[in-house]
Amino acid sequence: MWHFILVGAVNTGGTYAIYVIADQFVRFEIAYTISFASGVLFSLVATSGFVFRVRLRWRSMIAYPTFYVLSYLVGLRLVVVLVMHWHINEAIAPLLVLFVMIPLNYLVARFIFLQMN
Image (cartoon, rainbow, N blue to C red; front, side, top):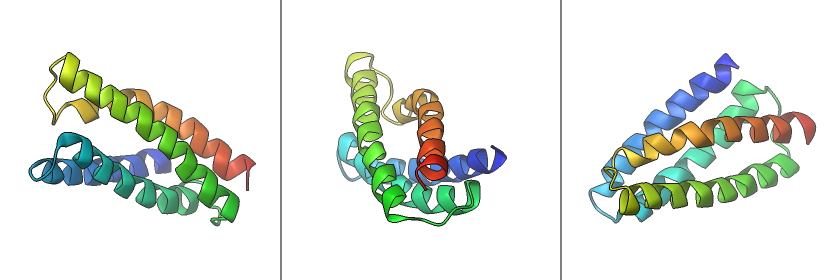
């Protein structure tokens, strides 16, 4: 579990930095997309190898990003609602979304890498 938290912290910090930088040049929705895609790629490699210590297989390489597409859609919708309807700052909204997405993502990642491999 500590490995998952470490990978998540590194991933969160890195993708948040990407989001903040990208937000200076593109709309927040595009910045979120860029940071999210970067995070999925990092997470796929780090979660399989460092957290669950399994080799990437085709099933998990397809299932993990597929799940993250659904996760992305939910996260993006939450960011939009927070920014557009609740008037939360664009830099803060993605951080709030993490409280919903982190537990869900861990449970699904565990299933994908330990049960599907």
